[in-house]
Length: 313
Ligand SMILES: NC(=O)c1ccc[n+]([C@@H]2O[C@H](COP(=O)([O-])OP(=O)(O)OC[C@H]3O[C@@H](n4cnc5c(N)ncnc54)[C@H](OP(=O)(O)O)[C@@H]3O)[C@@H](O)[C@H]2O)c1
Image (cartoon, rainbow, N blue to C red; front, side, top):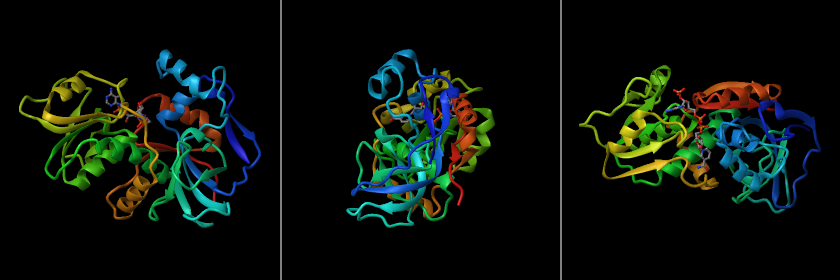
């Protein structure tokens, strides 16, 4: 099978396509034929991108391999079809469309991947929403798990005023839709180019971090989600935090680790099939365009998700 391997840490050019052995499922694994994967912020960090400050890059190498990546095949997100089953598998059958994250197992930049059916640090898997493409599923799984996990840290009630900082990111776009589903009043923060996009997904009010430095004195929020992390900031972000109500909740996507949770993926599937959650794919690249895809995501300004088409039907 074909895979994209990371030969060493460095810029996007370290990614190479190579023929590698197709994996065979063990008795507690499924074999997934991968139709789409995504390029996420996490993939850049695993590649050793310079967008991550040096001290964090060094820390990550303690887990990933000191001189070069121990796991050559990067990739955290996949959507595809079950092609074969180990004899102990109960949750899935051959032909099921599935989506999920590979956790410490990585390996989604390949035509096939074996995964266990139950959650572990090596991934989580669920049946895919039946009304979206494989590419859309990669955005919804990654952004959905992050949005639902961090928004779950506060209780959001109907009519609550919530603020989503970095609303045009993968997580931000799902967070807007989830907040709308919960009946919240949503203020989204993004740059000028993304104002119409975040409104289209359900934001009631929009603040432009490239033009505004402060939140008006009379606005107070029950909840604030920082959907882009601590390295992306602005004067407006500082002001947004100050506009939280006393007792309000602040969550940053950078606090703690992403939970690999197939129940949450199933919940996201239900909301997607019911029409509450939709994907937004900024760009979709071919397998051969992986360097361009990483270069684009590294720019820090992707809107929604960036998908990679792996296998065609
Ligand atoms: N906790 C975990 O385990 C975990 C796992 C994965 C990722 N993360 C975190 O999630 C973060 C987001 O990742 P992602 O892939 O969704 O997004 P991303 O690609 O890092 O962010 C892209 C978006 O950020 C917006 N943006 C850039 N600079 C901004 C600024 N100063 N203020 C507001 N928005 C800004 C861009 O909009 P404009 O073009 O309009 O600026 C763009 O739409 C990462 O930084 C990572 O640290 C955490």
